[in-house]
Amino acid sequence: MCLVDDWDHLSRDASHSAVMRRRIGQAGGHCETAEGESDEPAENARGRLRTPH
Image 1 (tube, one colour):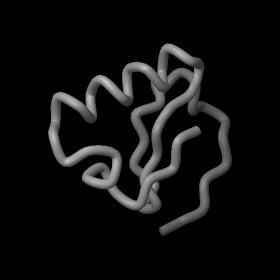
Image 2: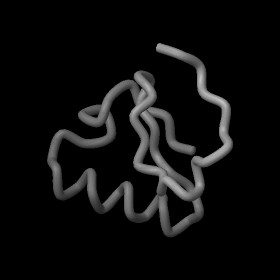
Image 3: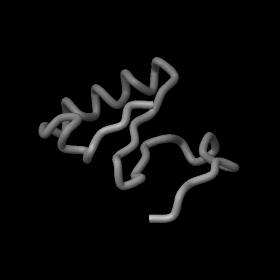
């Protein structure tokens, strides 16, 4: 998992952010923000415990 404060901290440029997130996904990971936003596919997140915000 790649944890970032918010999506802008990954990259302020949307195309660079998409490339970085795709590369992280290809390596078997996913990105999440400190607020709990995630780009992890829903089928992988099922059954996972999450803290309430």
